Length: 502
Image 1 (cartoon, helix red, strand yellow):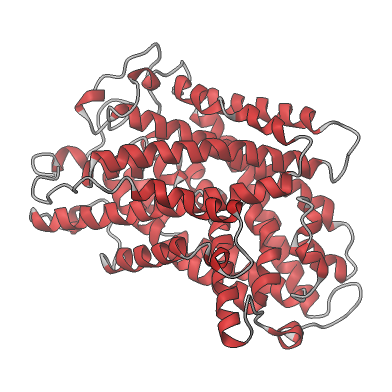
Image 2 (image 1 turned 90 degrees about the horizontal axis):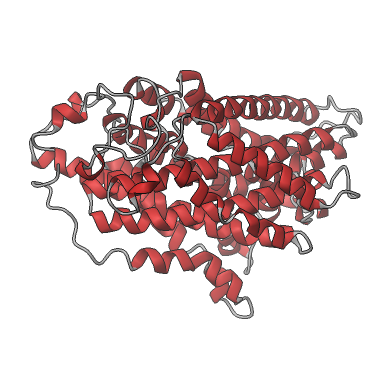
């Protein structure tokens, strides 16, 4: 930081990125460099609803069936606090250093280059393989209405749409996310209001439910063992599912350098994190846990369509039959939106790796729309894998991807918190005041330490059940711990000394 404080806290005069590395001060290529075309409304909508996807709409049903309504609610509250902590931490560093590549480049600068490089490549791979999973999910959702058309047709349509959006500039990506986010927000608000009406007896069947299902079959379910220990294990089992619902929170940080006035817009979006987490997620889980019993057999089905949504199950039980098609349409757009976001995040990760010298410089080249088209193209090479799932059980494959990508995302959160703790220590060691930062989060570094420890516990014990008698499976073990082994191998290099950190 020494000797660069003034430069780091002032946006450069060019429309390009704060490269953060002398190796990329001049971006080679045939375009104009990346553009700051994301405005306040884009970032706010992405921050509010960009992370809302198939996890909340579909996977939350399994969460309630496993842990019970109170157990699921508690899991979403705990991971909500973790998500808020990560968001606030990311917001403080990103508003100070809005670089393409986000937390990966921050790790390179404030922790250790090898950690940033290894984490970046692992994160790129994880985001890249997430795209086929999301497209597969969207194609499965379409079959809710029409099974006569081969899923490969829908897969091709979705691929073309996602590729077009990501090649035609960040502004088009921002506009599509605004549309998708608006649909999700309106749907969730409608579900919350409708669920409350049903709970109070306003449904077609006139049944006033209240907290009846918290008494019978009960507020908590058991897992593996009975009693309080089983209740706790059930709660812990669904933490990973809750974390999946909060995924892609990194997109705001990744897009920092493509945002107009990032030191003003990013803090404004970050401050709303706590509200959006607890309104959209916690309130949704509370309401749906009140109006559908955890022992409803429909919660355990795995069709991959709206039929497994706890919201659809709840409204169907009350006599409302029109909801499945609406939910299915919104979840389908959510899957497409998530796939597009994964391409965006992965391509900007490659761009950031290239800027720091950890990837070929050709990946910095941008087309006339300001898109790093070679980085986008390399990200898209794994997309054809989705066609392998056309004749297979896509819901099972999607479940594997959920575990892999969630654990990888949580490891990314670990890197974010480690980076912030080192950043905080560097400021203190070199005599800089956090009051001079564009955005300062209260309660630091304690928030980062608490968040870091919680995420480590969740990751370390994410597959605890595979070690119990009769429950071990190779797929269960690898999907939970493969990324852990990869990450552990990255921690051999020493961290920067705080006094030489710049």
